[in-house]
Amino acid sequence: MKLLGAEFIKSSVSPEQFPADRLPEIAFVGRSNVGKSSLINSLLHRKKLAKVSKTPGKTRAINFFTVRTSDQHLPLLSLVDLPGYGYAKVSKTMRAQWGPMIEQYLEQRQSLGAIILLIESRVWMPQDVMTVQWVQSLGCGLIIVLTKADKLRQSERKPAVAAVRNACGLGPEVPILLYSAETHEGRDALWGEIRTQFKT
Ligand code: GDP
Image 1 (spheres, protein in one colour):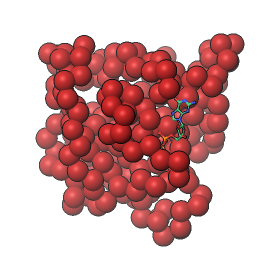
Image 2: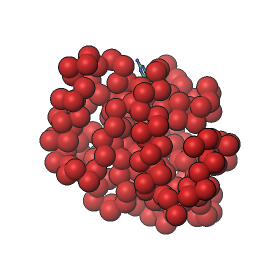
Image 3: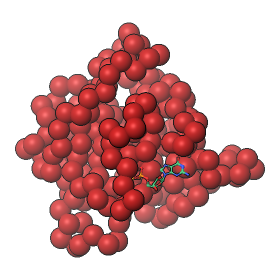
């Protein structure tokens, strides 16, 4: 499968600004600094489409992209980059605004087909477990990705996946993948899971 195009559509800070529900959407969710921008860039073979920031919590808007692949069974998709949650240094008002925005998007978006939830492979927290459980309750397709896999030793890889599966109480139907945006490990596997969720 080849990636034929990836385009930025718009940034939205409130539901009125979301683009019309048109294309099937995949939303990327994760804690600030989990490596979400890096993963999106890696997945789309681009260097700077999603911004990679050294300052966690900078991206506060929901960013929409369209993605076209050569796979005739995979429709034109909209990829949605949600702001990272849980960064302590942003103001309370800011957090109070963006929590509901993410919730509203995930709970109400008609065209949302699957959620890719990112968790840092070495540094996962109770908040990640709570997010997994909440997202699962939405009844939408779910793929868990453990990021920064290049930081794991070989012997830590399987236990890292098993630990997240156990802590979150996830059955075998929820895929958990290891991904490294540095080496692009996991890229084909993630496209494979996306294909499983969306193929027509
Ligand atoms: P975001 O806040 O979730 O969008 O995270 P970023 O993509 O901006 O990444 C946060 C930090 O983690 C940056 O310093 C990245 O260079 C680093 N990072 C992201 N992905 C990886 C990865 O796969 N491996 C390693 N070693 N570092 C990564």
